Length: 174
Image 1 (spheres, helix red, strand yellow):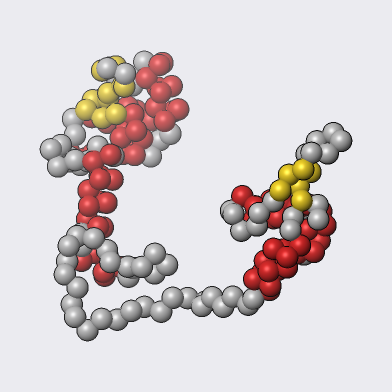
Image 2: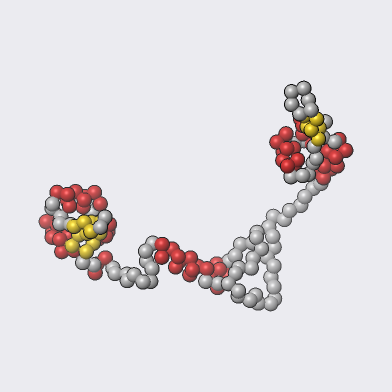
């Protein structure tokens, strides 16, 4: 039986049949043809495989949660089966939330070794901080710096504005 006949017999596509061969569920013998080798399948093996395919497989809609009466030891690892979802309180018991929030804060530059100073208490402001403090757009502030209306200095790659200069500029606007 060739590939197409075998696929029709099983009621699957040729590609599905090829996958079954790759997975080792069906064996195939290749015979030399006129232009290329052709795949030949054994009819008895296909018949047995078809019977296996037609067997109903019952899968539960969800895996039931296993409740144990013994308290689980906290080893720092979640002990859930792969299909099971951990509850928030179970996750927080192990400190996962705290660890993740610490990692995120460190990536955002809010690590514990850097003091957090509110914008209202800073003497020098970045353009983004000046924007947040005043409510003016970044482009508006940059235009004011470029025209000389707002004093600013470039430190490294970013611009810094003195808080008093920003206050003077805002006062001149109104």
